[in-house]
Length: 391
Ligand SMILES: *Cc1c(COP(=O)(O)O)cnc(C)c1O
Image (spheres, rainbow, N blue to C red):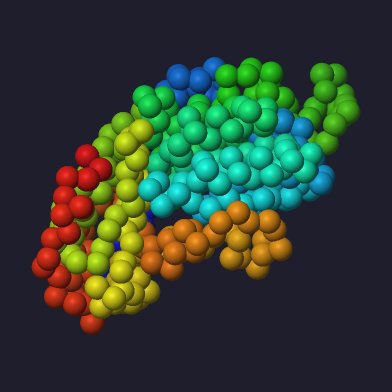
């Protein structure tokens, strides 16, 4: 049986034509007309002043921290429930990650806990240099609440919108809700360039600085002159061409992923012991991945039972991120709260959510879910899940 992947790339003729155009033009370098055009089109789409196309989302996080002047010994507060790249980037500049638990109603950073952490930092006389807020699985965090505490102490926000391109918060595009926005075009994201990223901001001087650092910090001179340490983080012109084709189809990709979410919610509506990641009322998720929470007592099986059974029939599902405070690499760092993200990791599962998922794929996934050994006959609808679909 053909594999059904969690979130495979979804390419079309437009991307192919643009890639060949870039190839034929011989702009085969981390610069060229497609890089410039991709940045402009991207900034327009997100409605943000400036954008720098980079080699990865991780590079964008690293440069965001450098642009804000974060350095050795500084603290940076972030969500525990995230992909490791967020926390890794903090260590690249020698800074110290401090973790905040998730809010059960959104799975994103708990604004109350952030407020408490910043108050405690202020009381100690040592504020963090930045807060990296993560838009989880395509859903924006609650920026009005988070911003309020950050503004009180004048701490800048980096929005990790790596997976949230196309989502909105109060009508604003994900990625423009902090001081700097980070995006990823890795192979599994909602649009992809195989690997790539973008750093965006309304502050033109910051994006200019990021571009400078991303191209080995070359000072203006005919020879190679360097007054600062730089990086090789610029996006290839070939990949930018692919990105332009993908970006043009973003709206469609969001609708396809949201349709997957509606499908799962409606197909599993009657299952007793399953609930879905809630969609917060303040915004619209891009539904990058559809995630559910299992109650093993009621369902008769655990998330791992489901995942392992799907794997046997060549269907890829993944546990929710293992929180950073439970990772060996970060276990000695400060953590505020922790029960919520630990529980989401224990009981959460991400289902195949690609925008190219077919009707036949969906039927196969549903059959496989219904045949997990030990599953308790599931026929009682849970009324609180009715009408809460991501639609
Ligand atoms: C994918 C991802 C990143 C890193 O992006 P890359 O392009 O893979 O380096 C950062 N943060 C989150 C939340 C991600 O999902």
